Length: 159
Figure (cartoon, rainbow, N blue to C red):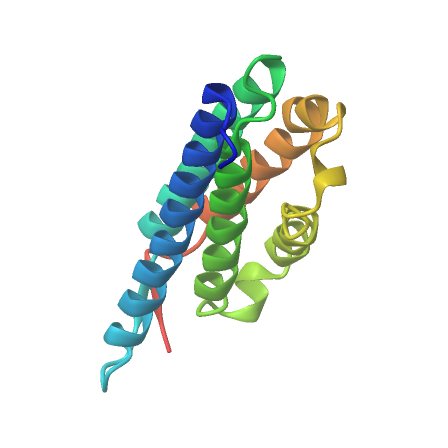
C-alpha cells in the first residue's frame, strides 16, 4: 500500500476542507435565496450590498496575504477565498438588479468586469505572480468604486 507524505496529507486534507466549505456556502446561499422567494416579494437592502462589498474587501486582503507568503501561496484556501469573492460579486450583481436602471447604470459595468475576472478562479493560470499586485492596485480600487456607487443607492428596492 502506498504511503502518503505527511505534508501532502495535510495539503490534501486542507483542500478537501476548503472544497467542502466552498460548496456548503453555495448551497446555503442558494437555499436561502429560493426559500425567500416562496410567495413573497424579495426586498434588497443597500446595507446588504455594502456588507457584501466589505466582505469582498476582507477576502481580497486575506487572499493578497496568502499570495505574498511563499509557504502559503499553494494553499487551497487561496482558491476558497477567490471563490468567495466570485460568489459575493455574483450575489451583488443579482441583488443590485432590483434597483432602477438609471440608479445602477454606472456600477453594473464595474461589477461585470470583476465578475468576468473572478470567474476564472478555477484556472491554475489565474494565480499568476501578478495577481497580488493586481489586487493591491486595480482590483481593490474598483471594489471601492463599486462600494461608493452602492452607497448612493436608495435604502432598499423590491421586485
